[in-house]
Image 1 (cartoon, helix red, strand yellow):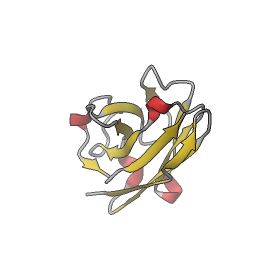
Image 2 (cartoon, helix red, strand yellow):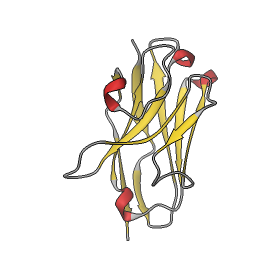
Image 3 (cartoon, rainbow, N blue to C red):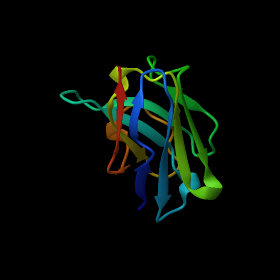
Image 4 (cartoon, helix red, strand yellow):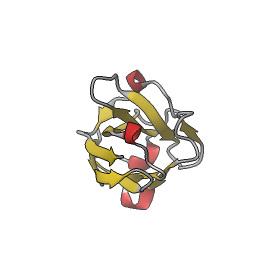
Length: 125
């Protein structure tokens, strides 16, 4: 089992940046493939980015590659999402998620077994 807690959300103007963090506890963090998803009001939750347990090997949603960067620090049991050039359409609740040990990154939310509670990101125009 792993427990996930997101932080770093907030209100930012369009064009600004935020860095989200996902702190993990309860298990061997560096064996888990991790991902970020988001859910905007009235929309389904969608994939943002994911990375392998070692940190190498990343996957991004097409609309976010180049603006968002996913990373992890296994020594701190923490994953990050650096978001630059934010747009109003990036407004959503952002969730971090973990797969079971030794799985590869995935775009499919059904592949993830553990979820955080989410952190709100609001981008004003």
